[in-house]
Amino acid sequence: MKRRSLLSSLLQTSLVGLCCTLVSGIAVGSARAADTTTPPPTTATAPTTSLELPNGKPLQPGDEVIQSWTVVPGGEGQRAYFSYESDGGVTINDSVSVQNYGNVSLNLRVYATDGINAPDGSFALLSGDQKPADVGSWITLAQQNVTVPAGQQLIIPYTLTIPAGADPGDHVGGIVASNEVATKPGKKNTLLVFRRTGVRLYLRVYGQLRSNLATEDFRVSYDGGLNPSNGKVRVRFRLVNRGNVRQAGSYHLKVEGAFGTGKHDLGEESFPELLPGQSIEVAKNVRGVPALFVAKASVIVTPKAGGDEAASQPTRRSARTFAPPLLPLLIVVVLLAFLVVWRIVRRYRNPDDSDGNEIDENPGGDSGPDEQESVLV
Image 1: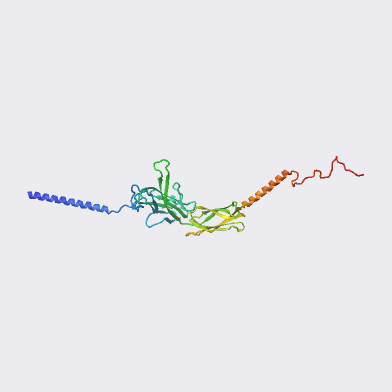
Image 2: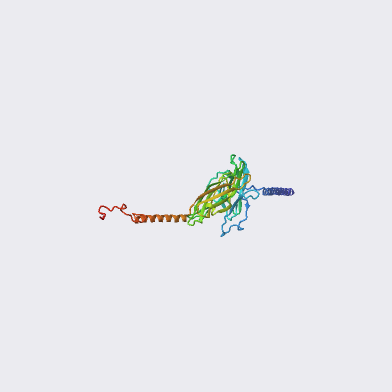
């Protein structure tokens, strides 16, 4: 009986050990299977790629705070900007990457807007408080207010929905990441500084393309000063892109005085690329034009040919203005004034004879009733 009890105890112990081993194996296998599961795809709320910090290490006490970020196209490859060509009524899916190269986390506002030309003709984007009306309003970002840790990048998907009735031609905008920084946090008279950076977006909608570069408001004025040989001619005009494609080009300005004197050929000068509907003011001052009553200027604007569209024809504008020789005219005016004053003074001193001769009060020779003529008898 004792042998049977001992054998039964050993058998039970072995079964328990075997069960524990099986359970442990199953648990380990499950854990290994979980480790090899593919991680979830990157979303707009989960930055996954580390970037090299500028100082090579995380921020330490006493270190200078560095805020530096860029916005670039997402996805594979290295694109300097977004560029699309499409028909109307199409939706395009893409993504933008916001990269924090600083050593502190950044709270950023990411938004899409329209492109414009700055007063000097350079490319610019609408400010954050202006509502886009063109391609910037066709973009929907998955997230707009984001926090990007130091040394990380954030991938934000977006959709570009082109309206079915979109005008053919070029539509230009950009995607911007802006940051608001207080100059004196927690103190009075705090100044908020808005910094932003962005990436350009070019969209060409298929259809009829038109190149039309116009020269408008051509004006000429003259400032002679006291030196009649060194007058200054002011030339002002406006270049306007009336077409539906981006347009660059050059202009050739000439200035001269009367009879071809004081000729100035300023040569050919390029101007920045103008977006459809945008314009740029051109102002030139030319010295060394003599004051000979007339000064004139002319300009020839030559558009640069683009891709599929034919460039518009060169345009010529000219105008003239009055160029008075101020110093000679001033001398003449002074002399005339002196002559008039001299004549008035002479008349005042000799009221009876403006020529200075004495006038006989009895020009007829009548001696009067009190005088008698002596007659010799």
